[in-house]
Length: 323
Image 1: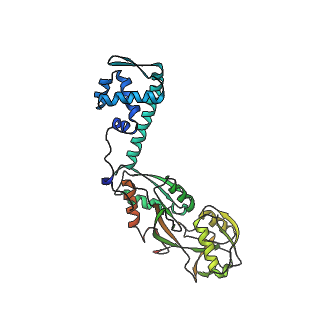
Image 2: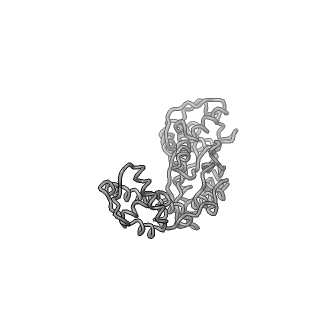
Image 3: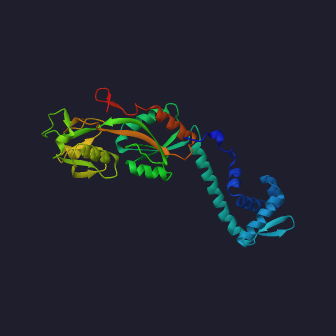
């Protein structure tokens, strides 16, 4: 199941005081009795039976092994220990209330928040365009955006820091759900004065003696580069490793090697980009999420939007052909 419908969730209390009593009942009861200094009055204000409130206070004192109240008939007063405890309890209940408000706000269907991760190469054009299109129909939904390489994003997804991520290669793991959305053709990028710069197409086998500049191990594009070269019958000789595709283009422009890269957002001077033939040189882009984690309504809406963009996720390049 991709998400749990809101109608299947237990009905949540609307009032902040109700939330606090639900999450920290004995502390809330203690604060109510301390505020009124009267068990009956506190029970009426909090709409709980007096017997429930009295038993909760007795158990609290017993568990703490401290007298919090001095009893005077139907009234009570705080002991010195009770006053010390009350100051901390009020701070704690305030934090519980703020936390409840925060998670409620993030889950609000109209104005909640989505924690969304994506590859560095998608941050200049692809993701801004996606967010603009999505917010046309969901103008108040907020986003927490994270740019990183694929493995790091999947770690953050598993840690609960991300709701969804766009990554490559499309992961296959039992704890994840992943859907392929699009693909990018990779080009061989060479310096403009390179011996191959006059070509339009290249078979990767012809680059076996070249020095390559690539992303560091752990990056999806590095794995794809290694696999493509292996299929072409050689292991690439790595001259430089980096963390960002446009930096690699700069290294190529400086004559420090060649690279397999997705298309640039804008043409870069100093390099020539060749079509790779003889094998399918692409990287697949997919969206991933945790298999067993229910979606909030904002996450469910954005997930549905991303899946609706299957086959047209990426900007069109190369004169209308998606690359």
